[in-house]
Length: 118
Image 1 (cartoon, one colour):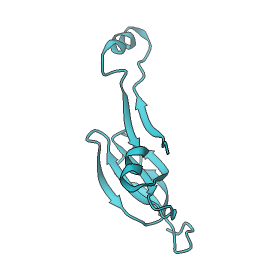
Image 2 (cartoon, helix red, strand yellow; image 1 turned 45 degrees about the vertical axis):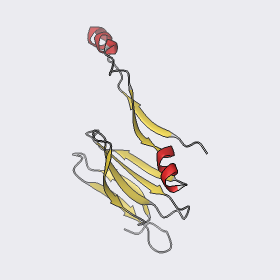
Image 3 (cartoon, one colour; image 1 turned 90 degrees about the vertical axis):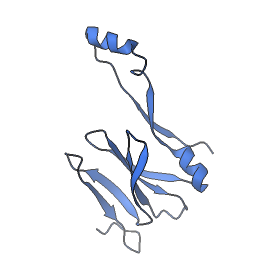
């Protein structure tokens, strides 16, 4: 099964500066933020629920289910290093929101009936 890939690409601004930057080799490269296929290869299955990039564009928080039971775990990836820096397994996390300063991440956890609880 082919899974999606979450990526981003810088967009040059207009004018002379934008034309100059578009000639730089790294400027037009697409940056892969999250490759569902890599996760599925590791676990055999993956369902990504929510994805949120921090306001400072340094972190990616996402929820994932690797069992098919729809009990989502939370992972936070440091985008410059491409490493997962925080993981909260099997907590039934259903929603994510960053604070404006990218210092904190709020999430909603489900109760035993899989309803959002806290």
